[in-house]
Image (cartoon, rainbow, N blue to C red; front, side, top):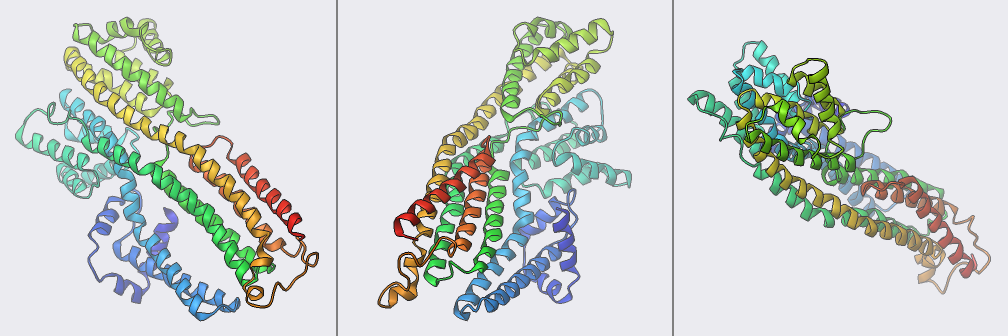
Length: 506
């Protein structure tokens, strides 16, 4: 983001481009720029002018490179224009795509986050206290945004006004709806309990729609980074430049393309569930965090039932301890020990025990439980049961994504392996495919006159591409041995090249 922020600032200082950038309506870009203010300081004019600047630079560089390679203008100019347009689109759409990438996480955390508002209001706190609690809760985007609201409040701006301004630029309808409900309830002096305890429908629908898109997008990305090198090999062979060392300049371009597509795919469609509670040399895996989360939801159901019977929180934790999973028992044991032997309060004990959780979702919910019970343990039991029931449904939807990636992982591996072999066979045919020889009486070489050393530039190019594609495709689908798979793809390419070249007499 820092590089993009500096690029945007530089583009805004170019008078001609900034004047052009001020023309036209870009409502979605305006909203994205305002939305990203807590994370990145930029402007619509800066974004558009920097996109023009990057597109112009790419066009000039590509046109100059084409002249050095003595390519035809009929080929060079369209290619340069296409690349310039692609880079322009990448720069100008980055804020919007970044905003949309936060939409799902905002929808997922909207109902849990505003449970914090309810807890503060139930315990007699103000809206300023609720904003402070959210700002300290380590939510990926909202905590930074709410810290900005606190800063505005310190400068004299009413927090209600800042919240409404914040809601206007949210991509998540759930967040916007909840903020409006908070402000409305404060104005009408009504209870937030029923208004903010509903299911986050947007999160569930967004998850399901992304799961439906997952399979096709995954295969499109994998196919693109494996079939484009085949087209490149055919093009170089037809042009007769397979022996020219200049072809090696395509290697970093394809590696960058592969990396860009993988990052774009992973950021929106990877089987990512939650942030680890503690980062270190060996943080817990997403599978371990998901298993703990599911067990914690079962614990919430048991705890809600005990609280509904009239037990206090301290008694209920002891009663459900033996029925809880072994993944949750360390949290309960730490809480019970702290309360019984160190004479600390239940809220302090549960806050300390939350550090034993693997994922931050479990830790945050565990810390919320004593705050919920401050007002009424029985009512907290009802609320815990309702929260757990809707989170269990969402957990099942989240698991669909992991199962889809597991099902497609084999297809991606198979696609990468077969494309490596095809590239090996195809590159050995490069002397046959030279269009100059095809249009003449016959090939311009005789068996034994062309060796693999003559084809070394093309061979090194494709060896590097297959190594990178195998590694990055494996990373894209969460493979455990991505480096090894990249080496396997590269070795398979080399073996296919050697075997096919031997048969052809190269």
